Structure formats: structure tokens, C-alpha cells
Image (cartoon, rainbow, N blue to C red; front, top):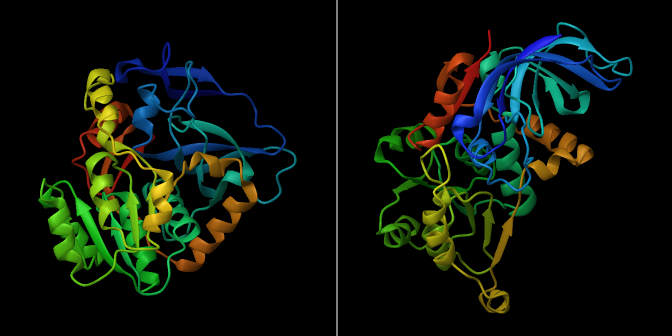
Length: 340
């Protein structure tokens, strides 16, 4: 059957290489389902994938996109837990920018009955990232203090909701004061607008509290200042490096090189002296861990985090504009693309 996709042609490297084309989709394999995509979620990781900077992404022509929602159109002969017409949401190791997708049934789950397709496409990547960072790696405990960078985004929102299940004191950092209302709405205890005075502002927000956990998708000077204030036995979880990203269609390699050589460096021997931990992860790793993925999805369901926040909804024809909107750093909540 035919489908429309946004494929990087001839290869990753520039936003301008993202072309909308029609191509043939084969019948699903025995353990796969074909999903008619109704909405897809944009994620910050899509940008380095498109620009050829994401090590886990293919180096040749491919379809970006990590999550979607839609309706099961057909199933392979080994699939028994889904049927044609089921409403689902799912994740994929790339390939999400499409009107139809074949996916092993392990990577989809039923769309909650009260959720829209847009909400289904805005949940899984952010919720799994927040859960894995806070619960699996940081081992959050009752009443701890958590600093969440990019706090108004999808991961930040879900991380705050998870932290509140542990009665944590949460401090959110944002790049723009206009996002402060979103943080108040989500119940952050304090927030900081990132400026050159960030470290002093963080000390004021902490008061006499010890900073136990930092979630950092930014890197650079923000990583350095956060790590310095992190308390003994503190855990810093790194899942991105947004400070290295540029806003053009192509990467600005000169700017990235300058930032690379100015990046904070850690001496592993001093970590024992400081009694702090730095851990990093890539959510795509979980794609190969089917049992863990299933377990985390089950625990997220138990936490009942509520519907994801959606900031912007655009049609499939404006997908590239949506990616640029996300790249600007001015979005709040999820950017979702609807598919006709």
C-alpha cells in the first residue's frame, strides 16, 4: 500500500533534505501491525537526527520520528493482542514521520479511551524519558529536592509530575520568563529563568535545602553550575546537549567546536572525593529492551500522570515548520503533527 513520508534525501545533514514523498509500504510481518497514523509527536532528538549529529541514527537516507498514535489497519498472523480498528499509541526507532507504519506489536499500547490522538502522540517518549531518568537512574526518594532543566517542555512536565508522586521539592529552570505560568500551573515549587546569574539564583531557590537530583538536557555552563551545587550523594542525569544545537537548517560546526573545547570536564577520581554521580542515557537504548520497556509502561500507568500538555498542533503539510518551531526553543508543551 502507498503511504506519505518525510524522508531525508539524499541523507541527513540539513533540514532542507527533509522531503515529503510517497512510497510503498509492504504488508506487516508476522509479529507486526500496520498503523494508520493520525498524529505524530515531535521530539528535540529529531533535530540532531535530521542534521546528522545523532550517533544512533542512520547515516544514509531514512525517515525520522520516534512516536505516533493511530488506528490499527492490519495485523500479522502472529499478533493476537490487537485487531483492526484498535486505537493505539506507540514508539519507534525512527520512521515516525509517516502516514502508515509497520511496527512490532511490542512497541504499541492501547490509547486511553478519554485521550485524543494528539494526546496519544505526545506522551510516550516524554513520559518514558522522565521515568527512566528519575526513577531508574536517579532512584528518587521521598521528599528529595530535584532541579529540572527545560522544565516547561514535555519531559520537564512529566518529570515534575513523577517527582510530586514522591513529595519532592521541584525547581524548574526555563530559558524564557514567558514560560513561568506553565510551571506554576504544573505545581513546581520554584523556578529560575536561566541567565548569567543562574548559579546564584539556584542557591536562592534552594535556601537551606540540599540539591539531590538534577535532570539536564542542556549541558555546557548549565551542567557545570548545576553540578557544583549538587549535594553529597547527588545524582546528575544527562539526556541531551541542547546548548550545542544551533538554529539553522545545518549544524554550525564552528560554533559547536568552540563549545566543545569549552565544555566542562570531570575528573573521575574527584567524583569519589565529591561523592556525586553523573549518569547519561539515550532513550533509544530502551527500544532493544522489550521486557524493561513493558515494565516501565506498566509503572507509568500505575502512576497515572494525567494527559500530556500540548502546546502546538500543525497539519502534516507543515511538519518541517513544526520542527523549526521546536528548534527555536520557544515552544511550551508538545508540538504535534496531525495526519489526514
